[in-house]
Length: 403
Image (cartoon, rainbow, N blue to C red; front, side, top):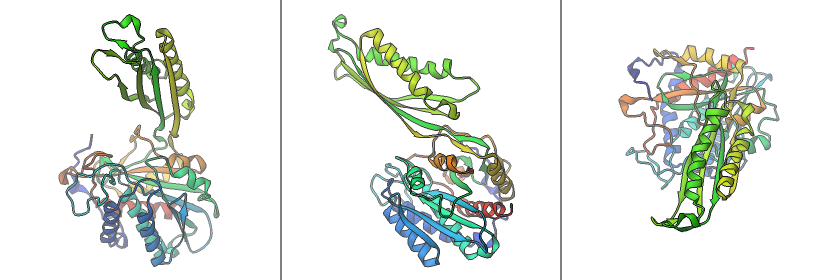
């Protein structure tokens, strides 16, 4: 639920003048991305626009990494540590319902999660840092990543060497977050977002007439018992102090009212924070499905795969971001430490390789009707957040190189 903290209390005085002056450009870039959204590994227009700007500004960069990814390299006044900043570029297969001048021009594709804002913020950060290279010591790598929404672009970018040459010492990233009001930052050490695992199962029974059930093996009854039994995994196999979710999101069976279906198909997702659960839910889920099927004389086929591990923030980097946030946001809520979500993110792969911090930047403004949830066809955010994002990144860069 979105907080209704009055947005009139937003204080942008801690955003430096040079960054506030970027606001019209940040809005222009964000709306450019929003009007021309592209799905994962298809972000060619987006990548071309980013590359054109970086080339125009004289910023060294490499394109075509993991299909459409880009890495910009900005060197400070001398060589030292290397900090990476990551932004995702892809959109979602959603038909936009917003009636705005910058609405999606690509039918059935929409920036419904804020990645257009992430990309604009990263581009603005690159511009500012390039023009203030004498203000920091070290190297900043800005990673424009494809396909966060799936199948995942972080891992192939890592495999392509984006964290090497020069080697990255730490990484940060942000997610615009409509679950928090404009002018807040959500940051915490440890688990911020959940692991994402998926499954698909087909139950094989024996069909027949609805009036003669004793001649059948009812796949609907089997599937219904499996759905109920799967809920015991979290309720009875997981320590109550840990958080986890097993959701069956799809269940399809049958073709007529008086016919017992011979097959049923279900699919769903598993979420958890504790990395020690890797492999556990797959094993337990299959045990339950196998047991229920055996008791009815049915068979099954199960597919189970891991999409993303949990997003685990390094304590030291989380403290750095927290200390910066305290200087940038000044609403009654300010910095929000308890901001976990069972949503997933492939930023997790970067955080497995190097210490880092992923944080939320509140972007909802109910007063302007900009508070629809992520992945909603009317999702949008208050663009006042864009210079705040740049300020957060720039201050994190400056503080990181102080140590």
